[in-house]
Amino acid sequence: MAATENRVLLESVTVDFPIYDAAARSLKRRLVLDKMSGLMAAKAPNVGGSVRENRQGVIIVRALDSVSFELVEGDRVALIGHNGAGKTTLLRVVAGIFEPTIGNVRSDGRVMPLFNLTEGMSPDETGIEMIQVRGTLLGLSGQEIADRINDIAEFCELGEYISMPVRTYSTGMLIRLGFAITTSVTSEILIMDEFISTADAAFMERAEARLKGFVERANIMLLATHSASIARQWCNKGMLLEHGRVVEFGSVDAVLETYDRISKRHG
Amino acid sequence: MRRQISLAIDDVLAGARHWRIWYILGISELRQRYRRSTLGPFWITLSMAVQVAVMGLLLAYLFSIPIGRYIPFLCISIVTWSFLSTSINEGATCFIQMNAVILQVKRPLSTYVMLVLWRNAIIYAHTIIIFAVAAFAFQIVPTLPYLLIPAGLGLLVLNVSWMALAAGLLSARFRDVPMLIQNAFNVLVWLTPVYYQPEQLGPRTRLIIELNPLTYVLDVARAPFLNNLPPAFAWFAALGVALFGWLLTFALLVRTRARVPFWL
Image 1: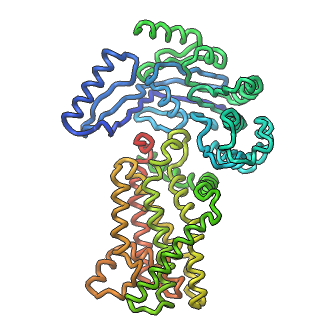
Image 2: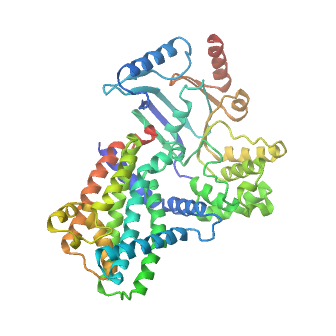
Image 3: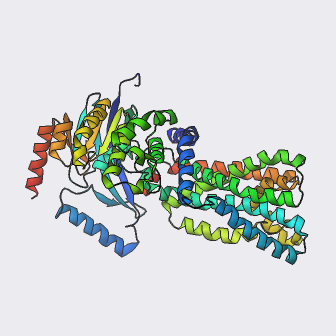
């Protein structure tokens, strides 16, 4: 553990996205831009940030609009909002993948973003190779990986399969392996796009215990989710994002209520 | 601006510090590429050996050069050139191809360039065997110039790394660049003395290859293997290109580093 307190601090963070694909010159560009702003105003009031065009004629989408907040140790925040509200962008900013166009971000602590459990998995690698590659991608050292191989293999109940190519695994085995590798890592600041799902029913109970340990080892968690039950079960705070702005940051229940109200208003 | 400069320096240093990432990924990629084949990466060795044998016999005859002199030259020439051109071409697409990973984990951009260089260095090590065999067959006995091999290879890597990084950064934004580079290399292989020696050209045609910086980069990495001492000018040219190229590429990195993820 780091000596300093873990903390995430965002100060009026704005993120602009250039969209080059849509920047075809002249008429076509005009049409796209008009259509997009029209769409936003009328049909889909919850979707996306503002769209404009810069001087070079490149279309700019404002994905986050002066977002400020602070997360301290013990915060487990459910990030809630409609598709396109900027949730993934915000997670990427906290993870340091996107640097803000305007404003400042500080993340003190070891950050582990989790967007995909099976990243870096290829069918021809054996279970052990898989653990080594994915463990390295998640930032583990060679020694740390060696220490964990037995624990992971045991948890997955893979037995002899651990040294077979993963394409011989059933879907359940593969998910279990990805899950076990990921949850063997300790992250001070945990960032997740949708909660880890374990699908396999027989495996659920043991998975739950392991997951609990994994989440509890993290000092701060920021979890983007659409599920109210997951938000209530795992989080102690909620943050509502709309059009790239933080509309509400408070208790999970209050935020979910506001979210429902907004969703209903727009049908 | 000051902040962006120090972040760019950090990017390169952190890429080197986290060498385990590209070390393991490079090995894992090659392992996958040749999984279940008996020869594995030696397939590259074999295919290059066949290419060198056929080309070597034919061109030695056309150029009227004794085989014993031409074939070792062609071996080391092709091995070195293919490291250079493959690294730059793969460097151009390295950020585009790794987009899923780049958008998932914060990692220095230089990691992905080092991954390309490392992978091609492994391939270089597999293909240099062809030269070793040719050198043995044609009785090339290592003498003093062999001591310059590390310096020559060092300059090669220094040059290839800035070219690959610059190609990658430009390609992330302008998607025509990879195709442009690929086509440029189809021509460059003839405008650089890869298959022939500069002395075979007349003084006026020679000017073209003398203006081509790749000539010197190739020469300092190749000549010591053949017991030749590259002229001092070649060393200065290769070093000059490396410094100047890195300066430009670094300026490009300062400007584009933070934007690359948005372009993917």
